[in-house]
Length: 237
Image (cartoon, rainbow, N blue to C red; front, side, top):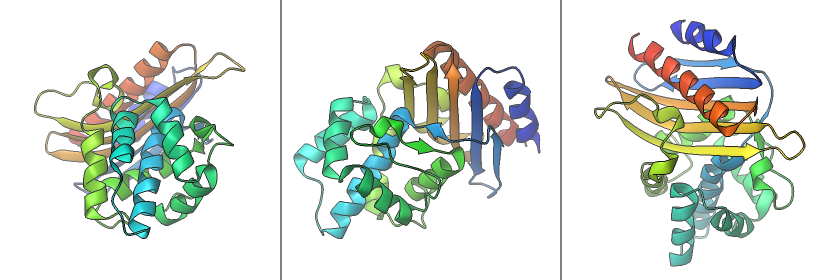
């Protein structure tokens, strides 16, 4: 498959660990290439936190409060950590996330300990499952909940419009959430990007995760290279 060849070419010269999972919604074809280990989520877990909150609200037969909506907006669009802290507490922390993930179909994700939601561990395959719950039709999330999440992911702040959106021209569109974190024990960076990309008549769900990067800039460059190579391989068919 061309995607595998394109991704492995990038990975051959990369430092640290990196992996890609992609699903072409136009054909139903999926692929996963790269490191076989768990990655720390950093801020991409914020999509999971909001999905959990929306599930819990639906179970309770209520809408999100005005405060929850404000927190959700800045958490996704601006990657605000204070808002994530508040909503992490609201969903019941790791226990709440774990229960929701069982319903969302995430089988390879371990919530971060205590208050450390950013240290949640996951795999590209599980992030693809989360994206299917958000952007697919066969989902435990209601149509309104999916639409709400999609809207926020389609309105991220301009300084965070990187990652899987790399190389898109004006005819393309993207809904994304990025995450980045310097690990305290090593000083090396985790950089992740997940979401949906529409380009060249194809619609692609894409999760690109990497760690062990010398800098945030290096991680972003690797993620963008992997995302663009994957998208090009799919759209050029």
